[in-house]
Length: 175
Ligand code: AR6
Image (cartoon, rainbow, N blue to C red; front, side):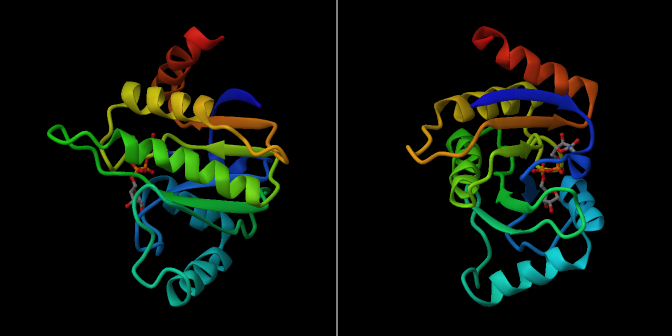
């Protein structure tokens, strides 16, 4: 499984699944969540509503992940995950690591080969970028795919140059 870095807009990626940094309501929001719903169109929200009406009446807990269509985006699926809000007084790293692990598990269930992640929690949820990048890279490297695994590439798609550089630094010791 290759790990690659791209600076750009995740909604434009030709991948099997894009991961959304959603909130527990699954009803959309700002940041990458807003961009994904805008680019994918109303079909995504329709499926999110269906999930709330069936499997997730109380919403999606932080650290978990669930898939919907990607609507009009080039990708096939959106994997919605909910990052933890950053706290200086409480260590929530394991919840952030769980976002990556659970999203990759869902990607495997979908037989996805290429999955694109944004920097989960590193925007509205306030996680410092260097730490968010470190957790993203480490939890992806620690992921042990099932033997039937189809995953070939995990692509981190970073919106800003600063975010890209933070992820490049996090990857350095492993390159
Ligand atoms: N492509 C790639 N990355 C993006 C894009 C994009 N199109 N747009 C923003 N980013 P955030 P969070 C980057 O705030 O911190 C929402 O309202 C952004 O620059 O999207 O997990 C949800 O509904 C940042 O580096 O997600 C939740 O309420 C990273 O994506 C809440 O925000 C994540 O920033 C989740 O906050």
